[in-house]
Amino acid sequence: MLEEKLTNLPKGSGIYLMKDDKKNVIYVGKAINLKNRVRSYFQNKENHDIKTRLLVEHIKDFDYIITDNEVEALLLEIALIKKHRPHYNIQLKDDKSYPYIKISAENYPTVTLTRDYKTDGGKYFGPYTNAMDARKFVEALNLLYPIKMCKKKFGSKKQQRPCINYDMGLCLAPCSREIDKEEYDAYLREITAILNGDTDALMSKIRERMGFYAAKQDFETAAVLRDYLYATEKVSVKQKISMADENSSEVLALAYDEEIAVIAMFERAKGELQGKRTFVLENISDHSPVQMMTEFIKQYYSTDASIPKTIYLQYALEEEQEQSILQLLTKKKGSKVVIKVPKIGDKKKLVDMLEKNAQDAVFQYRSRKEAERQKEERALAEVKNAFGLQRTIERMEAFDISNIMGSDQVGAMVVYEKTKRAPKAYRRFRIKYIEGQDDYAAMGEVVFRRLKRAKKEMENGASIQQSRFLPLPEIIFVDGGQAHVKIIQGIVEDFGFDIQVGGLKKDISHRLQSLWTQGRELPLEQLPDSKRFLREVSDEVHRYAYEYHAVRRRESMLDSELTNIPLVGEKRKRELLRHFEGIEQIQNATIEELIQVEGIDRRVARNIKEYFEVKTKFNDENRENNKKKQKI
Image 1 (cartoon, rainbow, N blue to C red):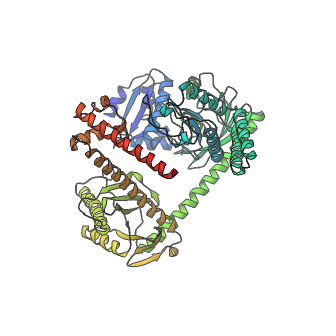
Image 2 (spheres, helix red, strand yellow; image 1 turned 90 degrees about the horizontal axis):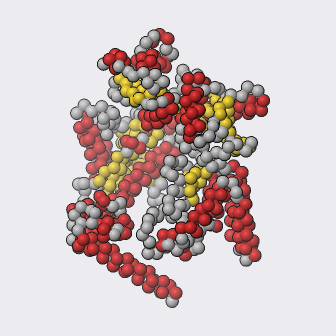
Image 3 (cartoon, one colour; image 1 turned 120 degrees about the vertical axis):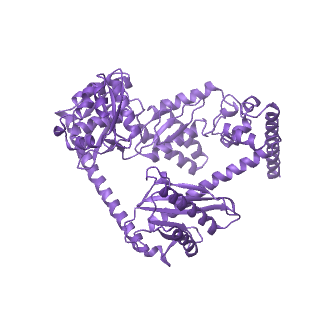
């Protein structure tokens, strides 16, 4: 089949996806001529480098997508590498997440601090190397400009009552139309100008407020404003909007060893250094510095990163890809982008200095990884010794139960592969067979169901990839002491599995106190290398169980709320919950919106509206009465 597909390949440009025997994408590549490029993998194999030979050995199938030109192929290649994370492609990791200041894409936008740069229509400014200064900068903007700070979404419908920010003078309540759109947009234009670097107006406002509070001898408030002023001064020097100005440039250098590479970047604007960033490249074996630099440029600048006018590199790009990359960058920026490799002069000295930073980053990365590895080995060895295990620990699971007086009981299972969390393997359970508050029985039910599912998957011959409850762990932790351990160990033995059970016993403050295993209690002080890990496991499974219980409580409250409405039975309740996101959306829906739900006619819709109108009126009257009582 492969030979036939190779024969019928088109000669145009496009991308190709190499797959293994399980149909997993293991490599994504771009080609000017798909026929020549893909066939080259299977011809003259003795001339391939080691990595290519390994790749070819695992190729069992391939797909391809034809594009109109090489730039389109480049864009598609980048997108598919991000989607599939193929084993034989270089992978990009940013070793530090810097914050941005974001103006959201809403009718009435907010100004917030975020570490997630998304293509959601918002305007992003930054990144900022000092998160504390950036946070104070945002606080100053929200204090001095009365724009929306809440996450509430509202459209054309006017809200009945603004929130507490309006009462405090921090927001002009666009939700209840206390401010018109033109006035709100004027504030946003001022804020945008400030984030673009024109901070004089903001600093003037802060100084004016400082003088006001100092005159009132409110020195505490004046000191807070002083901190805002300092933060504004620092941020104004370092900021960079998501679209760089025409005089901007960036300088990149590379350092690497046999396992990882680090790209170091200097950001420059108006001739001044704006900060340094470092990025880690993985899967680099048998790749040249030129290939690594090329892959970084393609992947990094295809994101929402700002594109400078000039990029200075330590190594030139691969000759066959340089023109398509330049076309892509120029198209995204909207003006010509230049890539240079300086050989002499100040720019060359800057690249050399940056290479030293990259070399240091490689050393620091390796040192950190080695320290983490040794720490993990010590922790696992200590846990292994505590349980008397002879085999290596690959997987551990922890279980917890959450309820309030036996209501809405749930169980949770978290998974650790060695000492690293494996969130995709986490599982949640609704307690089905236990009435009332009986944590022992509930824990037993959860572990029994988990092991039963694993045994069924084993009997059905399910592979690890297809399974939801395999592989089995070497250790199971339960929330509790000796009694919990005995119950769960008995269940494990009934299944015939070779799994050790330990109890994570907590004190009255709900902090982990000791580990119960092998019929004895080990205080955490006797486990110096693993106590931090054990605390993390205990806290993580409690968090996961509690969050699921909170979800179940909200669902129960919502069910109860809707059941009170005349003519709304179980079927209509399910349809309402399927159509709307939650109780607030149902409460704010118009009759026309409600009758869009299957099974809801005008009579039922009027019942729903009347129910919530009466409830709102009752709550408002209660609040007014409480205010009057407080005044008295």
